[in-house]
Image (tube, rainbow, N blue to C red; front, top):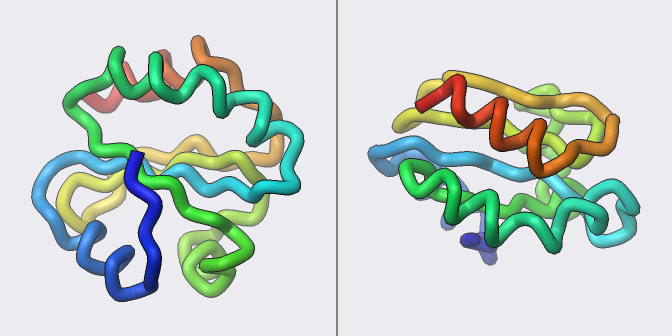
Length: 105
């Protein structure tokens, strides 16, 4: 999982070719911490995606621009075009995330 260190690095990732999963989270978020242990397996199950961790608090302007208010949330881009989103404030399970991504392969 990639954790961008700047808005510029995040913008470069948006522009890269390929499918990217932007996972919006925050360290204080209990539902985010719930899914953290499953992330390596989710990444392994979905190798066609690049996973990018976006700290919602650090990149609040991006979260607002992309209408991401509940976390954890996933926004999937192919190059710079959105192809899917799993955005709400509910806890997400490994199975739900894998099912969501399977529909975007």
